[in-house]
Structures are given as structure tokens and as C-alpha cells.
Length: 497
Ligand code: AMP
Image (cartoon, rainbow, N blue to C red; front, side, top):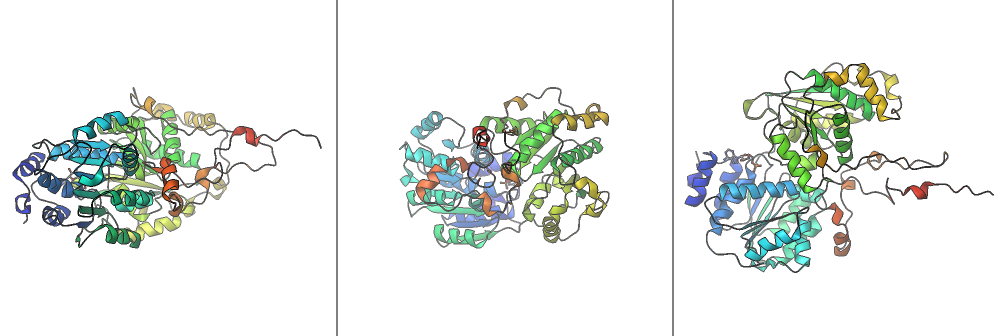
């Protein structure tokens, strides 16, 4: 069996790995580390959770032992799609690089430029960035990319989903052709393969089987739900309460960030200990929120896939899918948050009639059908489907009180220190409008496809103007004002004919 000592890593790195408690390299590490140390390009196909981060951090640390950084000329560059992933990679450098004296600079949005400039001035051995913030620094003339020897593109398929490819192409043009490129992606659709072909020279391809199976230790159940959000929220609360005895902590996944914010507020109103993680939150709130969840100050974490993807969150007892994920592989990722290392976990998925095709794709991917908890979709009372959304929050609350819900809430937050910091922009504004004028359609109820999530192809200038897409899991591109129509435009003038 291959050990870390067989891979060619330096003594300093090996001793940090031993201190981290790792004895056996994971398959991606065993496959990628030796060729990376030989300065070969790597095309790694692996998901997070496979030990992928160490597969590039460890050889980079070894290679960086020779040479020194110069002011404003980073020696290596790592691109990550989200701030959290970038921060996580920086943590990995600290952990495995504890025997090295390397200057690591994390360039992510939501942190002041000045602080980052100071790090760059000192000379960065490793630069870990989200693409937008890196380009902003380059435009400020604070960075010279001509000294980059190793270029890492991580989570390439996620970068594609988030519309970052034009940015990455711009960045790649600034880096010397002679660099070593380490390219990682969880999946390899043709667009990503083309990208890899452009960026890599004679790469070593290392592939780790994607997790298409779910752990046997996870009990999976489907729960038939009506499509109205308020009914889904009530169904979720019932589920959480029913699990009270076993529920230690849980992640609740929504497909859209607006729903993350709405559900968070609803659960908070109902007295649950809850936090949220979505792309519109500022960096400090995101970091605090994650820390609060890891420290068990918060029991429930409502999250979107993009915000939660790749995060190294410790084992949770429960996963709730408030929405059936649109991409089947996201189901495997989501429920993989529980039942780790042989422990038992539970995963519940709320399913509406509209979700049938997504559910079929999931069951096909995991090669098994998932058990319904108490009756499948045919058991749903048809009449409830046509009920209208209650007009005020009060009714939702009142209904719950009548059921004794508030008193019965498990794990009520006695103090929620981080919650006040969240910036949630979900207040549904009710602009004045005439009766015969159609109401603006909420952004998130417009038909949505994977393509809608991406900024449309654009030239560089347009791309630069679209900064708001960076580091965000924005919903579909709005048409016109989207749902942000200024109220004054909706007032119909009372003109007499
Ligand atoms: P990653 O895929 O990089 O997000 O890593 C997932 C988790 O696996 C992290 O918590 C790592 O600390 C851990 N890990 C990485 N390499 C190993 C290893 N060789 N043995 C055990 N755990 C590891």
C-alpha cells in the first residue's frame, strides 16, 4: 500500500501530514502528487471530500521550498469559485505548511483591499483568489503575474456554472506559458474538457470515481409536499420536530438563495436555532455563520448548493432537502454531509408533483428508489394544491401557535449571537399597482435552467461590468428590472380621458 513517504514529498511536509493524523494518501493524492512534484500538468477529476485539496497543496509546499517571493510578484496562484473554498484552501496551507515560512495571501471579496495590498507588498508565495477580486487587484496595478510558476484552477465545472470562464481566460493570459498548471474538476463535460485542453500541456490525468452512491449509513426518506412554499415550510417544521430526539444538527438545502433567506427567516420566526449561508451575505457574516454552526451554537443551517459546496463541515445528523435538487449529483453531495465515517444519518427530501423528473434522475443516478415516508405524491389531497398563499406572516404563525408549535420547538435559540449580522434581502415588497396591471413575476418563479444561472457570453468589458456575479450564486438573469421594479413605475397615473 502506498504511504505518504512513497510520494516524494519533503520532510517538512511529511511531518505536517503526520501531525494532521493522516497515514494513507487518498486515491487522488496518490495519483496526483508524484507527477505534480515532477512539474507535470495535472488534470484531476475529483469531488471535494476526496482529499483533493491536499493533492495540490502538499506538492506545492514541497516545490516552494526552493526560491523566494518578490514584492507584488506571487510565485503560485490558486483560483477558487467561492470565498469559502478559497478560505478553506488557505487553512489547508496553514495546516500542512506549519513547518514552512511561506507568505500566503488570500484575495477574496468582502475584505479590504488595503490589507490584501500589504500582503502582496511583502511578496506572496501563494496567492489564493476568487477570479473577480484577482482581476480587480490586477487592474489597480498592484500585481504582476509574470512570476507565477504554478497555476491551480480548482472546481472548474463550478467556475463554468458561475460564469467565471472569461475571467479565468484573462488571468491565464497574464501568466507565463512555461508555468505548471494543476486543473481540477468534479465532472468533465465537453466544455470543461475543451478548457482543460487549452490550459494544460501533456497533463497527467487522474480520475477518482464520482460518488454516485450514497452511504448505507444514511436513512433516506421522501416526503410528499404541496408546492406552496408556506406549506412546504410547515411540512419541514413538522419533520424537524418529529426528529427532535435524534436531531443533533442539520443542513437544510434550498435550490435558490432567495428561498434560503426566506426559509431562514421563517424558521427564525418560529423560534428555531438557525443560520443561513448564501451568496448575498457579506463575508464576515458567512464566516461567523459557519463558525457558529461548527461550534454548535446554531442547530440548523439553511444553505444553497453553491454556498455549501465543498465546505468542510463536520458530520451532521440530518440533511433536509427543502427542494429536490435540479442536478442529480447535488443530491449525492447534499446527503453526503451526513452518515460520514460509518456514523448514522438521516436525509429527508420534500417532493412536490413538479419535482418528479428530478427525482427520477436522482434515483437513476444512485441506482435505488428512495422510500416515501407516509404516502407518495398520489396521497396528497388535491384540494390543498389550489389553496392560496396566506397574505400575512401572521397567519402562518397563528396556525402554528394553534397547534402548540411555538412551545414545542426543539432547540430554541436562547441567544443567537451571529444571526443579527446576516444581511437578508427578502422582504417581499408590495408596490402599488392597478388591478388590471399584471404583478411583476418574482424572479425565482420564472422558468429556470442551468443556463439561466450563467451570465450570457460577453466581451471583456461587459464581463467586467458584471462584477456582481462574482462570488455569488445569483438566480437567473432578470429581465428588465426583474422583480426590482421601482414602486413609482407601478403607480398608474389617475389621468382623466
Ligand atoms: P478535501 O477533498 O480536500 O475537501 O478533503 C476532505 C477532508 O479529508 C478534509 O477534512 C481533509 O482534512 C481530509 N483528508 C485529506 N487527506 C486525507 C487523508 N490522506 N487521510 C484522511 N483524511 C484526509
